[in-house]
Length: 145
Image (cartoon, helix red, strand yellow):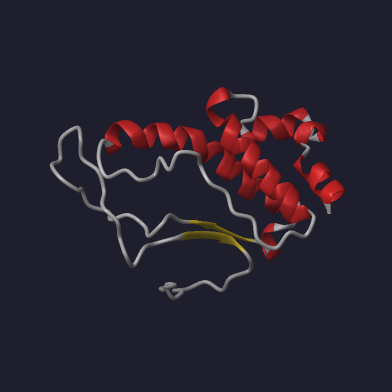
């Protein structure tokens, strides 16, 4: 297992166009892009559950969302899109479910005033986004504790 993990985590053998796809060639997307590429490599090797985090818990935007959210999205959008595209190109998206979620979701309304320091509070029922996995179209139930 130790030698298999070492190989799976070594992204240096990936071609330059894959590094560009995931944004590994750009400082702002390098960290999350590397994580997304490693996730794809783990899925390719049969790992059944892969979980990614963005360092520092930046999604907890109770305030100052207008300043913080665009920066967070610049760090994550390109790598996340690359992961889905790459899985699809390799035929892995049909058997892989990609789930985006947070601790318990976010409300679509403002927390506090609507000024420059506005944010969003937690949302217990939560919403999630899914891609792949041959799910049937239509409404899917929510997971609850």
